[in-house]
Image (tube, rainbow, N blue to C red):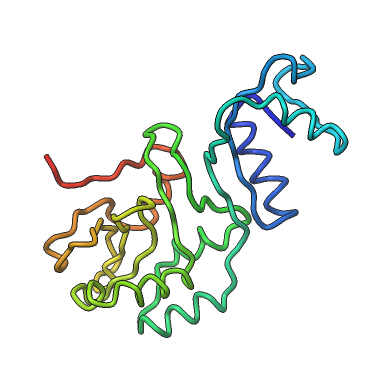
Length: 200
């Protein structure tokens, strides 16, 4: 199904496709007018029409957002055992919701955000072993898809969300992003979150 409005595409992805498939993507692309039947903003594409429709796509197909189904309790248990500390309840609630934002371009700010499951977090911790050692109580929960990581400082309750780069040598070289993970999630869901790189 192709729709002409990102909000509607997001609604369909989160309410229909994630519960059915466990994952859904919102993509953006342009279509030549000849490839659309003119029935408004929603275009139903039958299985035997896909190849013909695809011939009329022009330019790149861009992934705008990726949504996932609930993360299992076992992942949280594994991560919390490795960390020796619990992850915030708001983080668990987000990742165990029926459809959670995994990665993509935020609608209002234009920032690209990529969130990690607890298991992915542990893999990143192993890859970032030296940096993790320099940040006691760290939990890497996301990033910008490149060199900057969204991290929790689990030494505090609630843990603040900070930004740590690959070159970060300790907590004093990170930048505060939000007071807690609930605030971060609210800003991501509203599309307003922006990375603060501490350049002011």
